[in-house]
Length: 352
Image (cartoon, rainbow, N blue to C red; front, side, top):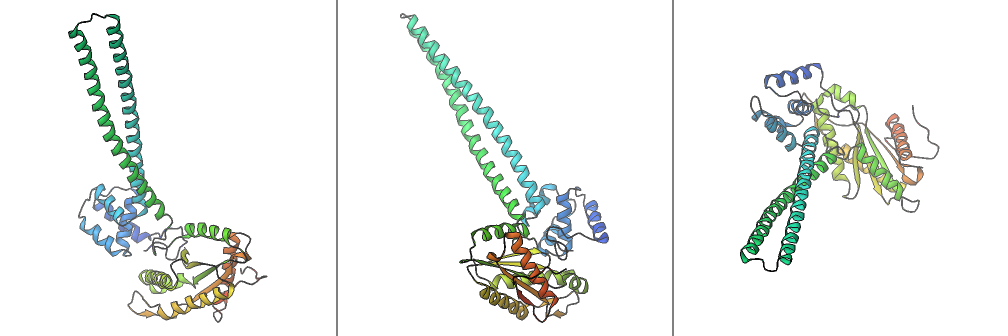
């Protein structure tokens, strides 16, 4: 079963009892360690939502190594594996820093020893004006030996510093990738609710009555019923299909996110309420004219019921109020199929 089809945005799709038993059986049969990230990998491989991952998992053969599993998880950007890799690299980076610290301390000690040796030799030469050439050469040989050891230590340290920096950079990239995954909807690749709320806050802060922004919500009416009636595969194709349609229907600088299992959110800058309604109508018509998805029986389904609500930023006191007003407008549109697009008007009340 695919992640985030009919559940909440932050609740991962959970396999049923039969699917759970199948996953456990596969892991036991292939001697795969019972780690959360391995469970996630097997779940995604068996769900059918990612055919490439399923094929790659099959090619691993029986009893795959943990390294092979982790590499596969990284290839398909599974959050558990990205997070584990970032944590491992961070640990390696800390070890590298500790090693560099120790080498720096050793190098500093060698330099102090060399300085003391130079000072001792100079004092000895001053104290004994008639010092012989052999003794002088002996002192110089000692200093040269210490200097060679220092050069070798500095060379080794430079190499370790370079390797340590490379490890730190790799760890940073892995951590950034893992962080980015937490801000993305895994099914559609769109920004998720967490990313959306951040954008909503930033947009509301810079909006004014003279130069405002619009929030448009599009809800798939009764997605749970469609999922139950037509199956998981059809629901997955439906949501992915809508995501593709909406991405193509908006401009590059416009913002789209999937904030709930059945809800897409759009933010449009520097437009008025009339423009927002026109854009909402265009999105509705684009989805209605282009959406076709196959059910688990192979038949096609059209006429998807959608509800759209829109509201301007300056009409809300804060970002969450802005989202609440948009939800109210969307709820009203859902209750009136003959008017599937409703803009917020002052005085609208929350629908129970």
